[in-house]
Amino acid sequence: MSDQETIQELRAKLETLEAKHSPWAHVKDIATILTPIILLVGGFFVQRSMADDSAALTTSLNHQKENLDIELEKIRDSRQESAQKIEQSKLLTTLMQSILSQKPSERQLAINIALHACGESGRQVVEAISLDDKYAYNQLTVKRKGLVAQLVAKDARKRWEAAHELGTTWSGDPELINDLLLFAKENTRTPLALYNTLVVFADLPATSFIGKESLAQELLALVKTTGPRGAKTDALIQNIQAKLAASAAR
Image (tube, rainbow, N blue to C red; front, top):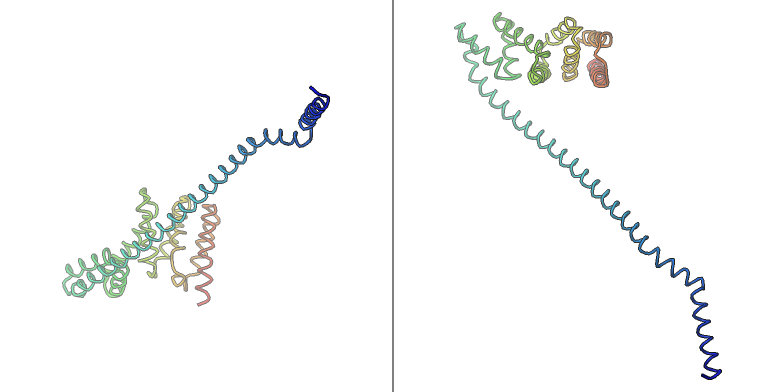
């Protein structure tokens, strides 16, 4: 081998050695090691981000479905209520002749049917004739007090039905607030009685409190003194106070 070839070979080996120990070579080696790690870590965060987005989307869709179900249920309830009122009106129209009958047995039967099956319109008709009909007056009183007493029934559904009927069908009855307050006073040691009385008061329209603000304030004072307590009770009290303010402004 000539001296020239030897020199070239040595020069090539030197360049190779320098390349191996150059900074760029180290960078290349480090990059070769880190690339899989970076891809792995990056993939983990991407997957977690996608999972979070998917969970958030699922939660959002579930909320939307729940809201839609609630709205649909309200629509169904509204339709059922409208259909029920139409049927009650038809029945009440049929009963009117018997309600005005001179035969006590026929009149009393019609009064009972109107009071128990014709909703608010039936109650209003019976209330109108109760001014001159003792039987109608007594039946109104029995029905109203029975519903009030049912606010502490063992069956939760019966309690709900009673509270709902008192807050809607009987909301215009002039004796309702008196009976509710009396019931609360007689059951100060029964938190459920006081709470459900508050529920009915909160359901009543502001017009129901016109001229009866002092009675409502008496109930609120009773609840604040004897209980029950809690966020729900406070919310009901605030609701009632707002309605009292509205009734006073009329």
